[in-house]
Image (tube, rainbow, N blue to C red; front, side, top):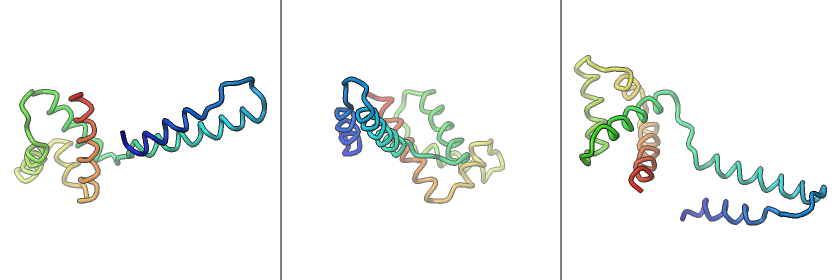
Length: 117
């Protein structure tokens, strides 16, 4: 379990189940605000191009049971762009910076790990 998940779990345990008094209500609302903020940190915000490529990758991995590498699929997108056969995902992929690509691949890896559990 990640440190972030441990912290969220700890905060959830701190929520007070008691008679609704102003102090308990304020206490719980502050904790809920912290929990929501921490959960938002777990969900990376991808830009439109990253989301297009991420969705494309997810679709390809759902279509097959073979364990193809993510880089193989990304190479296919890149090659389609070079060959002037790119669809929306190929064009979006070519517009990603290296940092955006790395973030999108990280999100994909997290998704893939969850799918295989």
